[in-house]
Length: 268
Figure 1 (cartoon, helix red, strand yellow):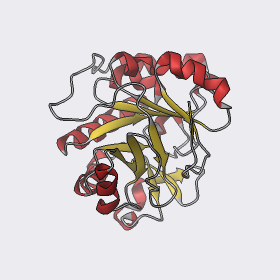
Figure 2: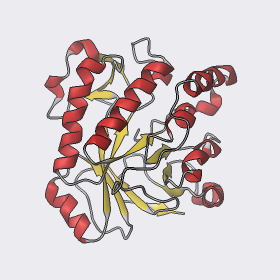
Figure 3: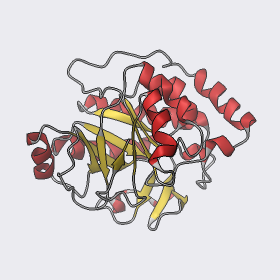
């Protein structure tokens, strides 16, 4: 979310409980083994997250998460030659007026602004419209040689999007994204969406989280670690001394970043 994590811990406990009940009744609770050959990063794997411009390959870490549009096949190949795995960042929950495929999204699926310039929430209920658009983005990630995808904004139902989204809509959409990624040989990460982790952990290959320590939510990511899957985690406001001890205890892959997600990083 590039600094847009929802402070779930400040929401009504009743609302969260109801969301968990809905999610828990929808199946996919038990972890499933990945398909042969699909990459599943292990807990504690170090990473770099750079969404500000073209990738700088100098961070000595095994995993890079970079913007899928702003980086080409040559950038991915360079990282592969250096022994890195590479995750393709795409926005799956909001329309962006600066992307080359912006005109492919009809106005009917564009909702309210999400707080970032040029972005509007998508009506994720419209799988008939959004599935082919997202599949094209996943095709781009595959064709550029990425190993995995980070689909952002998989928690629109927790926001004021301009659409009456419910937990069931989000589950259907997130499952569609995960399955479409797997059909293309890509691993896929669950971005934030903490209430639905118990239901979705078996379908996603890793998690990406912002600010779970700041909002006292990191324990909720434990199902991924127990399943042998990495949790790639960042904090923006807290000092490393304030979150790294817990992160190490929980097996998270944690670091402090600036909200613009440039090259700077301070890992635990």
